[in-house]
Amino acid sequence: MLQTVVVPLLAVAALFALWELAVALFDIPVYLLPAPSRIWVDSTANAWTLAGHTAATLKTVLLGFLVSVLVSLPLAVVITSSVWLANAVYPVLVLTQSIPKVALAPILVILLGTNELPRIVVTFLVAFFPLVIAIATGLLSVPGELIELGRSYRGSWLQMLWRIKLPYAVPMIFSGLKVAVTLSVVGAVVGEFVNADAGLGYFIVTSTAFFETPLAFSALILLSVMGIALFQLVVFVERRFFPWSAGAGQPMVA
Amino acid sequence: MIALDGVTRHFTSRDGGLVRAIEDIDLQIGEHELVSLVGPSGCGKSTLLRLIAGLLPLTRGQVRIDGQAVTAPRVDTGMVFQSPTLLPWATIEENLLFPLRMLHRPVTAAARAQARELLALVGLGGFETRVPSELSGGMQQRAAICRALMHDPSVLLMDEPFGALDALTREEMSLELLRLRRERPKTIVFVTHSISEAVLLSDRVVVLSARPGRVQEIIPVALSYPRRFGMESHHDFQHCAQRIRALIFGDRLAAAE
Image (cartoon, rainbow over all chains, first blue to last red; front, top):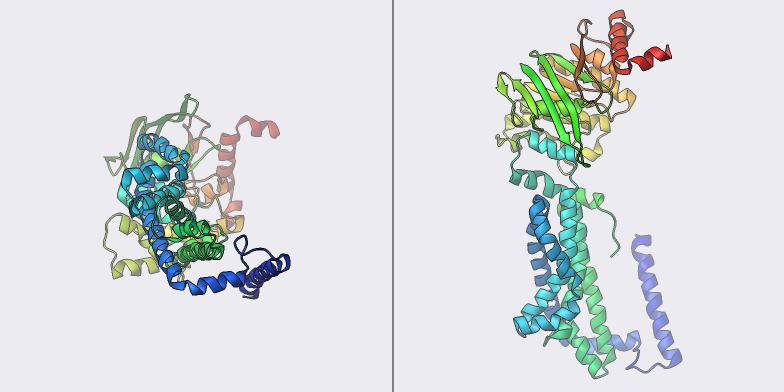
């Protein structure tokens, strides 16, 4: 408890204290680097505005993440089921990843309109690839003898997938989910930079345009808190529903 | 019971060459007989076992169990692998019920009772609700043997089942298998690389030659039942072991003497 909670908290507190001190000591103007105390004051004054933007971003993040999961799972199953399909799908996958998503976002707005959709698509495009790779790796990592065991009981394709391969892949699926949920936040902000009328990414753009730097910092902090919270949510789900997986997976730092 | 008739298995290696793993094997295995397959490493004994299991296609020849040709895995065979291959996410009891679920058989109270009975038989009573990682290697392998018996197969195919265990656990497991065999007679094909294990456990030992694997000689073990470790000093035991060693090592052994 002392090592895992108190020490990190103290370290963060010390960092903020140093920041506060430096801003006061060197007399840094607010529009360049606001002190933590100033960020706090401005944040509480605009709490409702920030809450609204946070909710908008969270919605995009969750929808994008959900689509990533819904697409990645069947896609990974398809890739690992047949060499033919793998050869057909894999190059397309790599192609989507070689395109910088920031560059793609404005084009998506033209294609899909100035609404929520391009933001969700960008979020999905940023988040889904590591998830597909993680799930596919998990499905392929099943030991040969375990496959033979399933076959010796005349397991059908569906039984092999449902009773052996998918459960076996769970630890790796969860490491993929942890990466994907964090990337979803990145994707949502990229989408909001390009086209949005709400959301923390949009709020950073408008705040900095008017040199309201403390509010931009508020949005920044809220984004990182959101990332950490979503990551911990995935960790919680894994520990709660797949306890055998939590120990098997490699430890990851939030 | 099990009849192998000209069983041959060739496959293409990664560099495109033809590998003759198993060549023209004829073998009859009687009901409730325990036959061991031994041979130099790479002789294809595990391949032969998988051909009997229906896990690999034959290149030529035929495997028949109770007169029926084996073309795919059969319901009346059970496999035990070198590694326990237990499902890490399932309890020991659920692992034992796995064959029934795969075979779409009902998981009844009677089935659960049978699982507990089997576990008790191999000294794993009370471990039903544990997960595999909480068990030692030997205990896991015992659970795997129980699992192979759950759907009550008449043929048990064991691929170096004790190969990954330490020497002491191995001996213990051999005794366990002998006891299990007395309680629930099965036709057993047992692949091993331990000559003393083969002699102690088997009715007959099939010695395979180096690749391509052919039957070099079939050695009947004339030891009486029940088998005990004390028999290792017995004249018949020594005779069998020497003969197998001579067949496997051939000239090299002769040169050493």
